[in-house]
Amino acid sequence: MKQPPPDSSLLRILPEIRDALAAGRPVVALESTIISHGMPYPENLAFAAEVENVIRAAGAVPATLAVIDGRCQVGCGPDELAILARGENIAKVSRRDLPVLAARRQTGATTVAATMIIAAMAGIKVFATGGIGGVHRHGESTMDISADLQELAHTPVAVVCAGCKSILDIGRTLEYLETFGVPVLCMGSTHFPAFYCKESGYEADTACPTPADAASIIRAKWDLGLGGGVLVANPIPDQYAMDPARMNAVIEQALAEADRRHIHGKAITPFLLAWIKDATGGDSLASNIQLAYHNARTAAQIAVELCK
Ligand code: PSU
Ligand code: MN
Image 1 (cartoon, rainbow, N blue to C red):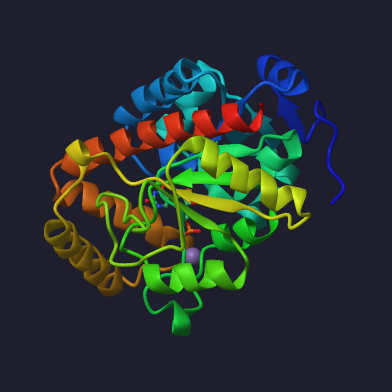
Image 2 (cartoon, rainbow, N blue to C red; image 1 turned 45 degrees about the vertical axis):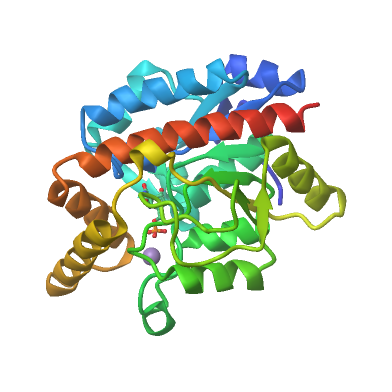
């Protein structure tokens, strides 16, 4: 893939991040759809600032990625974070949307897929988020499969997440990742986590006891010339984990409501996230924020190991 030069009308890397990358120091990418479409204002703005502090405290340089006035931007300042957090006319940008925003000089928030693409352009190896997109329920007939999974198949970035929400078909999501050769590393256990809950009922092959172990597998994948991504699933810390029966009941209601309103395509995930937040009176938001901090810390530790 031909890539734009780092300081051009298509790609801008903030100086602190460019210097860190040039010096071989650890950098962790963050997505912006979690800010604009995944959390409400103003909690999302406080989150966007604090998650960067968490990464710094763990010894890495944070880089929040977004598309600002059509440019793929690596690192956002406070004004840009505020625009993303307010979310007015902020597009949700996946792979297919990048050229549209670039050509029209528009601003948008990047999904896991688009964040991986821009991270790879900049040379960032590790990316922290909350949850990834995957195969939606009934995806075998609707074909609604998040572009995040194809990006994990092809783009060489390690994505640290808390698994995925059971708004998705988690079993088929794991099958898809297996088919496309994406290692799924679970931190501390082989139970694949379900975002708010420590277990999804599905197992992944590989448990990693430490960030150093995860980093060694990520490095080996690329040293073998296999390319593509690695998914690191990091279970939510005990004290923030939610009751699976409660969450599954809320998620079933959310899915039924989406069905009733005929919501589909790129709007479905933001709709379900907002519904779940409202139905749990903000408890789920607190858990969401904490698991994302936890992922940011783990991602920074992995980035530090990869730089050794
Ligand atoms: N799942 C979450 N929180 C999120 C998302 C998914 O629990 O914020 C966002 C991420 O940006 C993810 C995107 O990449 O939704 C997936 O959207 P889609 O299913 O339309 O590809
Ligand atoms: Mn979709």
